[in-house]
Image 1 (cartoon, rainbow, N blue to C red):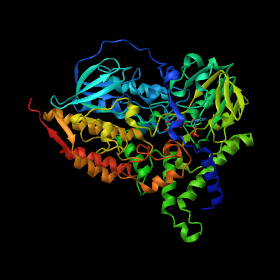
Image 2: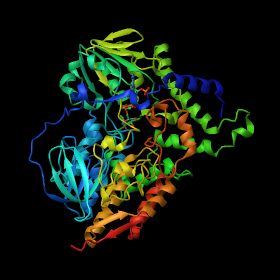
Image 3: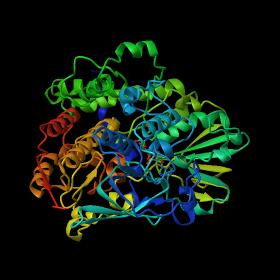
Image 4: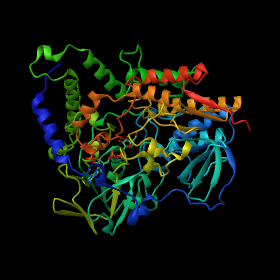
Length: 598
Ligand code: NDP
């Protein structure tokens, strides 16, 4: 491997990191609340008034995204019919309901990202499907499995209370509902609460402003993803250059009178290589069980210690995993170099050289190209994938305003200020991301009260504690459908949610069939699992050296709720197999079962 001038590059990384470090960490952001609360409103679906509910269901699922849809579908397959999804949005879809910005697209191959493809018989049209197709697929699942029948939309759960004597939960909502459910589960998403930068003056802006996850097509024009005619004569600012901005900027580039992209840290822009899925090719590969084979193969390629024999998805994600594996297998560089720097670091810097070369080859203005080059280790920030983003900066009406790592200085009534210069604009689009690393109970908006009146916030005072990421001691008949304290550190979250959903369906299906009233994980089983989960000290210390971002709580403190903090192991497939064996064994080890003798 040719050796880049590693020490110089690492010095540059440290200098760039230092520019971005700030003492307020996650507190630098502000919610879409107070005088900016209107920015959180649903621009897509009108709210329909209804009477509060006082009825009973077997399962209430909070969240109508992939987690709720898959859990609902598997519950129906397990014979549990009355499942009620409760969702803050106006329809199912979760992330794909809210994120409708132009160009929105999945970054994981459709064939392994879209749930229940085999069950619904749906064939995605593209290797990386666009948002509208994914939202439509969510609706397809809800229709096929009858999940619309009892669903409550534009409804926020405000309280969950366990009634030990009755063996059921009371679910309270902001619509005045107080219905009961034998079982509750929730999957609220990891990136579902939008945040705004706490830029001074943000509330004084007199023009139009919205968050990318609440795209205002009434203002920009054309919800179908066409030319965004409303922006033709407008000066538009995009604040942020993460995955959302990378996907919408190419569409804005040719639509706006002038576009100003305000950058604090450049993203890694990897190759997208999207293409249609050929139905004839698909018919050849789609033999029974194909989607599970693809899911397992991807998980193995991303996480197994040894390279699997084949790589079905074979994209930029798996290529990176292959590169990391090859670096790990090489001779110890300490044996042939005096710098003591690991071979993985060289591999990482080599990849970054490729990323930089792509910028230089695409962006015509050399100064802009320099500013678009990221200087940090690859895993520090979420990669992005696009084949038109960099070229958008060649459009004469598109301007990159780099903030030298400091962020926007101020918002004035008529524009955005950086380094004392005001850029007058008609519209500001905040592509500023979502809350990560904050207290998940506050984010969810309800603090369940479990057995003996104990709140989840008390049970988790020192961080998340679960068995398998799913069950919490003291919270009977309740399940989480989410990855933390589960077993995953790779890109296909949909796979993780599918395994969790299957497990919930297996437990609830068994309880209903066997007449079991209450299931609860024992403290011993939860403690034993938490000893296995552990915290990866090496990964943690790596993150501490990273440029600030949501992976490391903005570089200040990895905190109890840091996104990567707790996971079982890097071997995602191993975790999935463990869950499957646990389900198949049928004795639901670690769960205590009770009959109430009613
Ligand atoms: P991100 O958190 O990734 O990006 C927010 C952006 O806002 C960053 O560029 C950040 O800069 C910038 N920013 C924050 N504060 C300021 C400030 N004061 N001044 C200027 N810029 C500022 O949010 P996204 O919505 O882009 O993406 C969030 C996550 O959602 C992704 O990482 C991904 O996991 C997921 N996602 C997935 C997609 C997919 O799979 N297709 C598409 C879109 C999102 P800095 O980097 O310096 O903090």
